[in-house]
Image (tube, rainbow, N blue to C red):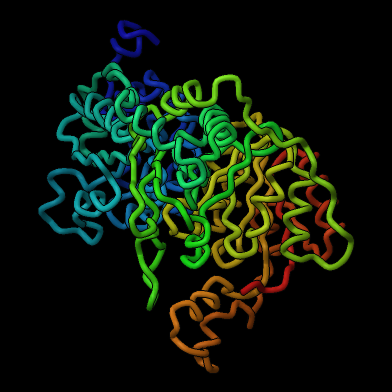
Length: 528
């Protein structure tokens, strides 16, 4: 509908004007878990059928799905939440979205302006909560201005390489008349990298393997990886990818670059001998947690750090410029397709990775929150079919199932595989309901080792001591062991349990061949 079309001449309330403007700006999906204060927003979906509402049964699913949608589409995502407590339930995956620099517009309903003074049970300080994860926060004051406020919020999602912008929407702003559509504001473009900085990195590559390129953000596109591979092959410069990636192209035909390890002790060996560390789209590496006797800063002593580009800058063009200067005529190193089926026998972590790689469809989206049990996935997937990888950026578990849901909505022509740890899955298992309702092509592999394996390892690394009976009980997920097959079927998602590598291969192939969501519960031994 054009600006002077019938929808503009017809009377509109604030919610209708807001949704019309979002659709005009290319935001045509809104993940939501609404309540009373958002009912006029929900009702307006009938007046603006171009907006697709996707219902989630938990706010953390809605926010995680918005993050996944933004990552695969590259466009701002929208999510609607109910008052402060609803925002609170969604904060963990908004934290992950913030760390991923995902452009997410978070609309939070609020009590009607005149109702605030009564301090009703759900009244809270929404803006203060929102600021913990948002780079931009605003409470809309009138139905006449709400659409323009939303366009300012959309513009804000593109700043600083991508961020969460929260618009607080009082109920009376939604229901009051006088709403007007607003045009989208110009998108924020990535800033070019200064030539002098490119010159410094060109000089640094002369040190061969004493120089390392640490890649992240937009450097993990095919363009960025191909340029980095050329630089490395021509100069001997080492390459490393940030620990948890927002989005990375991978598989056969895409340069393979190892990822930064999780344990500090392993990162030491990865960076051993590095005298110049070039940051390409990612900050300097630090330890995930503090540990007794171990350093928090992973940059080796005496190492010079050169920031080529932060997340808001055009790192792809900068890498290509460097490659053209130091690697003219050098081609990137591209792995061939080579993903054999796993050896027969009981399922292990290695067998799981091999089965996933051998069966992965072309052009899939892989969402990895397998944690300890997915440690074998990166080398196995390096020679699997071409795919896009999303991982847990902020460390707040319960991201995988929702992100896979959003990815499937955003890329309906691509199969989505979600590798999910058993403990993490229980945080946001409600995502299965949304997958069933929307008939999304998501195949979920729940890696069930009936243990908090990551915490068992962390207990040793923090030198807290050997666990006795009471502490051991806090690191165990048996007694009872969760029956994910029954849970999945209860949500309307077909499911089966497998205990061998051969059965996992069969289950995955059958799941990919049939439309709609599927779940496979893969039983593996715990890994420390």
